[in-house]
Amino acid sequence: MPGNSERRGAKRNPGSKKGQTVGSGSQRRKALKGKGPTPKASERPSHPAHRKARSAAKRSAAPGGRTGWRTGAPRTGGNRTARDTTGGPEWVVGRNAVVEALRARVPATSLLVAERLDSDDRVRESLKMAGKYGVPVMEAARNELDKVAGGPHHQGLVLQVPPYDYAHPDDLLARAADSTTPALVVALDGVTDPRNLGAVLRSAAAFGAHGVLVPSRRAAGVTATAWKVSAGAAARVPVARATNLTRALEEYRKAGVFVVGLAGDSDVSLAEVDLLSGPVVLVVGSEGKGLSRLVRETCDVVAGIPIESAAESLNAAVATGIALYEVAARRRT
Image (cartoon, rainbow, N blue to C red; front, top):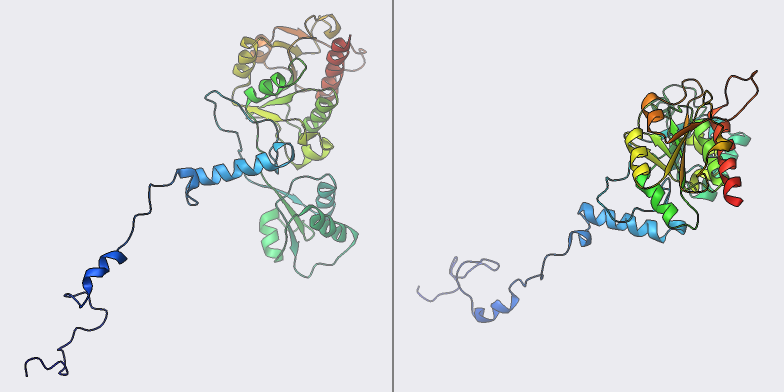
């Protein structure tokens, strides 16, 4: 009968949005409220700008402004390309290689250990140093290690090293501008052995060079081998990578830097070259081919290091060390 609220369907089901309810006038107070203006991109966790800002904050908070593989001073001003981080991670394979890399404090992201691995002194030392330096240790099946190492020769230990974060060529001049000495840069032309690069980094650190410049193609990069040979100098001396070495040297010349090429067939001795006490770039070629034609033509002067006729040439790293000593001695006087 009419008005009978007890019959089926006479009352609105709880939670139904149809129609009005008693006292519905106050429900407007429960309406959704605005969240205010849209946050900046750097403040949104899911936005790439936020991740970049967080990484920059970590780098600035780390000692020396460096974290992991990253080296060198940050760029300041100008519209420059992003830092070069070409290539994927490197894998150091084998018990001897892994323990030597950890002893040399090569930056690493993880240490992979085979399941049910027979332990020896090298394995125990690797695990101890990984724990000491904060390198994550993960257990993996042998077939997974075979895939990573490209074969079963890993002996149950594989160390993952992240790709090196190269500086921009302009960073080296900016680093020199922040120092109290004229710019001193070493440029390597066609040096493909990472051990030579590591030795050059060690000499560069010893004689106060502001950085090393390498081409992005057909040249050695900063690998675990180069890091070990540098004896830690790779952590102090930035390495910049140039897409075109000739163009980078021309830009250095425009900036007022004297470009000196080293060649064994030159009639000019390095000791006879003036202006070594000012801003200078030493360009060193490979032991076999020497300087390429375009790089040689870009140099302000090409000089040699006198040696006995019985020796055909000097190793690139040895020649760099001698040239850096000559520059350092000239500047001291």
